[in-house]
Image 1 (spheres, each protein chain N blue to C red):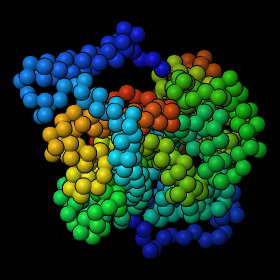
Image 2 (tube, chains in turn blue, orange):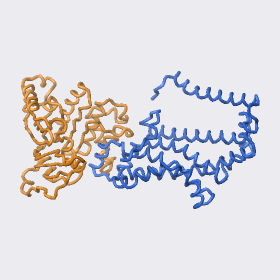
Image 3 (spheres, each protein chain N blue to C red):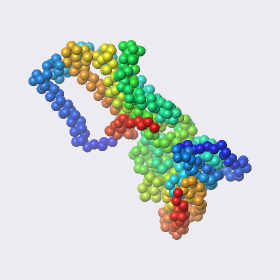
Image 4 (cartoon, rainbow over the protein chains, first blue to last red):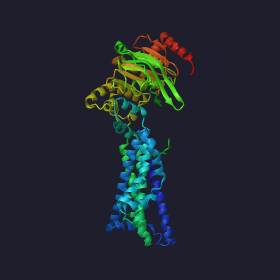
Length: 269
Length: 274
């Protein structure tokens, strides 16, 4: 299903590349002219070189893997909990009545504010990072999945129920696929939330990772290294989001809308 | 909305059960919904039968409780009073001997056409393999044999609705419930679908309860037309359609067809406004 003309596709893919090139050019010119000292703002080529050097020497792997582990584990656990709770709340009037207010209240708390307490309870380690990451990406997945489960055609559910299907079968056979595009929107948003939480946790605890790498580099006025790690983080975010998009494209093949549905607002009822 | 269940259900005595084992028997059914503005009577003292192999249409103004009637017959809700029997057996929960066609095709977009036809079998938790041949046969009958491996999105609205009809036949139900199945189609497609449905009904001889807003549709297809009153819905009028079968599009211009349609239109005009 091609919806775009070729020329339109070319513009779509080249336009961001051109604007990115412009930004890098301005960045480069600013440093070349000495408007900013190199210790504060390293030129782009230096940042790239420092990142490359990290891969050549292998120094970049331990922090990269540490960040991936913390963010990845938390993301998986948070998303899974979100899916399960959304399925329960979307299908049980009583669960919704008792719990939805708390989910919404919890969403209103900036999760980062809980970091000191989590460190207090779980120590400065992987576990604390995983917990905060899980809490951070919980809501976008929950909200979208909840709306998706609820938006399932009631006639389809009625038909399955009329033929004697239990709730669990209806959930797996009808609601889960029907909500799949919603769920993927939540999963895509969750990637960014997970990375933010992981980096902030590294800032606070100093546990090795790309976040603490940036912090150390900035503290020692090594801006090239800081920018290198920053670029890697950006690539990580883009890459994982692209993977989620790709998964959606293949798994939810019947609904390949390009426009994300966006985070659905939950109105307390 | 939740139906109010009253403790005093008027239970019929067993003598009436054996008297008629018609596919569908509705007896003195009341249904009252509890709403935030108080009780709402959807159906009141509704009684009628559908005989074996009979095509019965329910014709009524919007809000006469037609969809409520469908939910009752499928056992998704229970009447406040009265009894609904399928083949003489009171309906107490979801029942498998009915097939349903909705206003919208209501297909699973992630399943192929043939898999959609097999959905009732899966929903019942039965073995699908044995029914695959039956599903293909039904699709052939609906002139969709070539599209078995296609996805619903690749089909037109009329074709999708035909898949819905094939699906409602897969488990060989004794009674078909059709809830304005052609309402969402354009006029030309609707006419050919009416023809198609008559052909399938003639071939399978299923009992049909067909819910519609359209007078010509009801006259064209039915053996008998039941006119419901505005809310609370009850039987206002019953009309036997004595037109010979098979009926064709030419039948629609015959004097008997016109007079029956006129008669129905008159009933609607004289109907008290809710």
